[in-house]
Image (cartoon, rainbow, N blue to C red):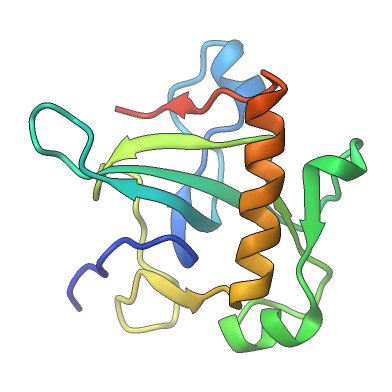
Length: 144
C-alpha cells in the first residue's frame, strides 16, 4: 500500500516520542500509536514536507486544557478501540515526511492512515494548540 498524502486532520500510526522521554535522552518511542497530523507544510529549505503530529492516547492529561476527548462515534469511524481516547495538544512531534517513524496499522493490509478527524474536532485541536503556542507552552520534539 502506498503512503498517504499528509494533510491536517489525517490520523496516522506513528512511533510518537513523548517530551519526557526525549528529555531523559530517549531517541526512540516505546510505542506506536495513532497521531493526528496538525501541520504539513513545505517550509524546509531542502524542500522536505515538514509535519507536526499530536498523539492520541487512552490516558487523559493531568491538565484538562491540554487534551480533547475524542467522541466514541469518531473513534469508531477511525477504527480505534472502544476505550476512551484523548487527543493531546500539549505534546507534539516534528519530522520530515514520511520520516522513519511512520508505521503500518496492524491488520489493515499495510495502511498507514486511520482516516480524517471530523472538521469540528480538528478545529478544537487546532485552537488548543494555538492557545498553548501563544502562551509559550509548546515546543514540538524534533524527530529527524
